[in-house]
Length: 501
Image (cartoon, rainbow, N blue to C red; front, side, top):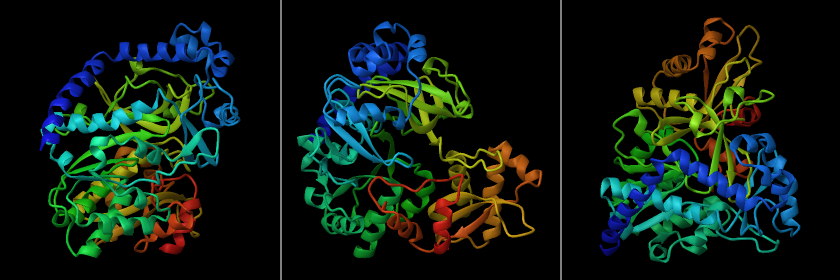
């Protein structure tokens, strides 16, 4: 009870601090920009890009091009060799190791300046929830975080591990007794064995908050129900808050609430190895501007944006928050106090509000379907699935979409939706038509292709039970922070799923 009492007082203080900088966004970002340039001016990167001559954002744009990981790889290699003052002053505290789709493993620097912001953002999200709702009961019970192993490789000149594992070393002392699973369980490498161990360890606890990627929390819930023979709300009657990130929760929400047995509050986060960018700050969404996540403008990150439709042009326009518009799909570009400079993290976002600045994640710039010029993005397929499922009470476990450009003779090409159902629609044709109509409503290019008889309406391929888990296991990505791409412009995933249909 004492913890929740003091949490409410602290939440009020933090809430006032957050909304103070949120009300002065341009000035806040300008301060971040100047501090980043000043701190890095004597680094190798700073010298290479004449940071000492930069006095404005226009200077910065001229001297620092947009890069992805490949563009920084040489600098990362210098750090790995032991050089100091390369991308940021000194050397990083850690490398967060991530699985790159085109670059193999990526090693993202985390510095003593950037690490506190990674920790503070997650804490702020919970405190703003408390400040708005008055609900702090969860701090008096147990909390579970489904994440990667906390083990860190000390063999290199910079300690290396998964972000979720690195963060595990920074859990405040006052929460360590509340936190589950145990360190030993968290260190289990095999995901299925790990979830089995978490089930045994947590089934008898007073769990009140659960955090993780929705698909893997769903697996945990299913194993708990199988083990206990009860709904989640019966196993954990005080469970009332789900914290998630990495993917859109909406396609999973209906099935999750079925497993839980009641509705629970949820908080969306936008963390990444490269930085913690945003969190949901509103539960009571009275209008569209309340939707989305608060963009963290005071966290050692300077943001740039490129309209995704222009991204692959020779010289796409780069803008700051001063010039963004609501509803436009932007590629997110960041410069950080971990030494990433005009870095394309690969995510696309759209603004839902400009006062304060709130965003939604719309997908990945490399994850789209445009086999015929339709440029379908993740947000569109997720919304179409969500609407069709809500209208039919169908529950979806997982899905992904790919183009079929070589249909059987006499047929038009189409988009193939691979779906693993919890319960199937009575009329699959009607269900697929509902999805297709919503896709046409959202995407005018797709609409024109359907109406012009270039494409036929989408087709659904039913994936067998646990088929997506089998696929993820086969490619070594079952569990942890791994997730299925919502869509792809090729059939690499689709062809492997075909044997599971």
